Amino acid sequence: MSGSFMQIIYISPREEINVENDNIDVHVKLDDGRVFSLLVATPNNIYWCMDNIGVNYFFGTPPLFVRLLTEEQIETAIRALLTEDDGYWLSVYGALQDPICPES
Image (cartoon, rainbow, N blue to C red):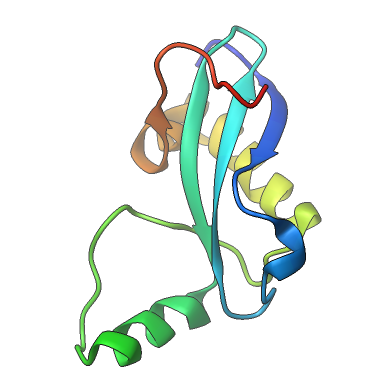
């Protein structure tokens, strides 16, 4: 994949995050100008979502799972998306935005 990681833009305030049980939307800006939107979540949050709506299944935007919603773990996971299998996973977990993220 051409383009490498440049910046993570947090859409929700990080101060309000429960690092063990939550999810957050982020934009990943690449140095080639492309911006991808991603949902990053903890596995506990998916269980909470199922319990909250009273079902035993979950589907929707595929989340990028991290053990804890910390900047370090989020960045590590995003770097893995960009490097493993030549960046294939970024197109699975991320949605390409058109054309440039307004928060940048």
